[in-house]
Image (cartoon, rainbow, N blue to C red):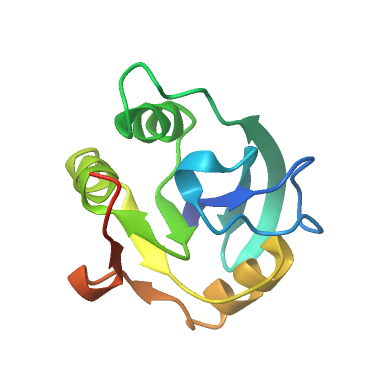
Length: 125
């Protein structure tokens, strides 16, 4: 059986493996969706972030669930969207990396980790 996952990485436009990673997932331009099969990138696609004044922090959660994300790698995240991702079964991971490609490489090496409450950003409830 193939091991498949879809990694969402908040990115600056235009997205893709060469794109700069966005430090704030809710305000990123796009999400680069990395499809992984058996530890290798099988597909890379870009999904535009949506304005989330209506519906608040959970709008990107619903978008990524609809797009099939199994995990998201962030630099930081607020408690509400963290709880939102947990409620829809998307793993929230934290890790380094300046570009999307860097993040994918670290993910494949096992150098990202599940987010802890200490990593949660304050101030955006």
